[in-house]
Length: 123
Image (cartoon, rainbow, N blue to C red):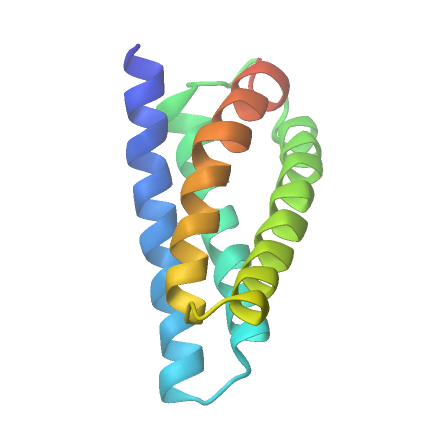
């Protein structure tokens, strides 16, 4: 159970990095919301991997290149689902990009990321 709570803390930190990057790029620099979201997701993914490797899953048995490769596979799916989900919700509803991003991020956090990282990336 400790692993789950640590993973959620890591997710929160990565989400803060993701959202901060997205908002700064969109609101301060005027970047298109889809590109701002993609950049935010990338920064959050790197943050999440680094925290998960050492603190959440305490995985040092396997080389970092193996874990990074596996993480990249899982993260790529998350990336596509996130970018597509934000775009779809924003285009098909009255939701702004931040509300769509919150909804998609929460869904992916609880249904996709934790389980695949625990059972595939850092097993």
